[in-house]
Image 1 (cartoon, rainbow, N blue to C red):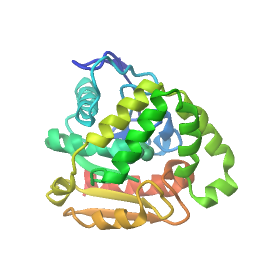
Image 2: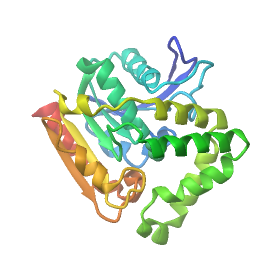
Image 3: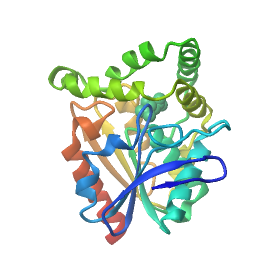
Image 4: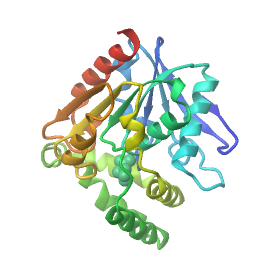
Length: 266
Ligand code: MLT
């Protein structure tokens, strides 16, 4: 399915199954396909909606600067097109930043929020500087070395050793993202606000999926925020990095189903 809204000329998404709605939001530099090992089991009980975020996969970026809030607006447009009043949003990393912006803007539409290797903290100064350097590198034509260096770092030492093919495939898929989209996402991420206050006051249930070997969202940072909301489902995956949908898909499916059952049926 393809729709558009005021900012984005085409927002592509896939839909599977029936029942209460779960939206799976991918991170950077990925597309909805990232969730392909996860959505079949969820679709046995739920409507699963998997967008390619504007600028990724089959969705166009448009001409205006991208913000995390505008990306949340694209998710709201998909829900409106599907006449979904309330959904559980599961956001991987950048997808989690977008899900939090969605919570800030459209809280009544949220049945629950699953933060999959993501954080409510804004970037610190070091991270902002690293993003600025990466933007410079990509602007100068350095997209390929950037992706080849960043993607392997998303995986645990065990995955690197036992499943190197998964990492190669992620590098290939990351290279498909246009340099302009990469720059736009990095700029949007470094400008995103801190959402810890929102989490601390969350009226919706939250889930935290934490990889013990995650080099993007450290174990410590994950633990610091996972008890702030009123209702928290917390899972820590040992020997898993930033990519549990590839490194521990059975664990992730189990936990998402458990959380969804709480959000929709308890
Ligand atoms: C992602 O996986 O979406 C990114 O690593 C998030 C980030 O750079 O903060």
